[in-house]
Image (cartoon, rainbow, N blue to C red; front, side, top):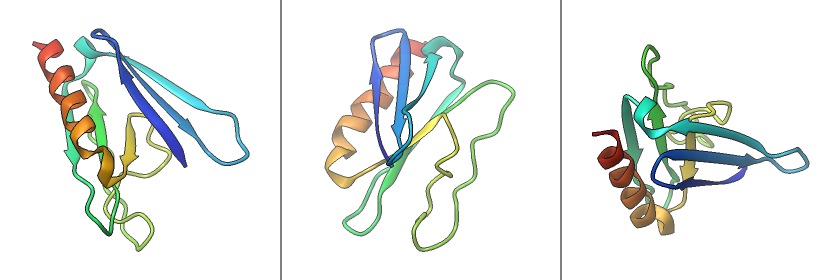
Length: 101
């Protein structure tokens, strides 16, 4: 699964593209987000960025070798990140947190 997250100062757009399937896109207004979670990737495992909405709990981290402690791919409000994206993801989460205030 490939994907991207973009933030224009007001809207967060999470786009996921699975091989052979149409892209899925979720748009969230930053002011509607009640929390953010980020688990940095390591050399061995991908990390993730996740946005939590009011009245919902964060998606649980999956167990297993391939999931490696990430939310399930079906969660529209999270995206797995490779190690090279840790810095960019941290900046994105900080920008969303700033916009929430």
